[in-house]
Length: 160
Figure (cartoon, rainbow, N blue to C red):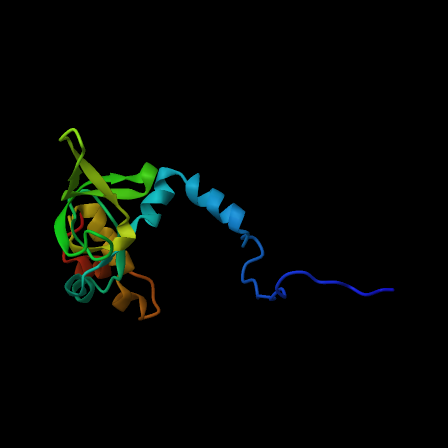
């Protein structure tokens, strides 16, 4: 007689900010798990420690081999170590002294998600210093474009 029967919870209407980007769970997961290595680098970022945050005015950085980190979530929390490998294919990092014994006595590295660690010491190379200079929040609040001098000051380096 024209009655509409609804099954399930009522659908909420949410405002979409960008029509070009899908909010579909299926498409988001596909994009995540088929992402190229360059995009995985950015996804595999970790927060900086409080001292580094104050020093560089940056909240997080893509993790890199030779960074020193502290695990702060999971079974291995409060473990410190150096990043031995960034395993982008599996979205994990391998940390020095975070391993376990197999039944046959062999030792295997345990994969830790970068979101579960804090970077305590950065391995600074020229590219990383430039990135820190670009991400510096204090320089961004001025509302003006960054100059090479701003980048040098923020990272504390001499650029050619």
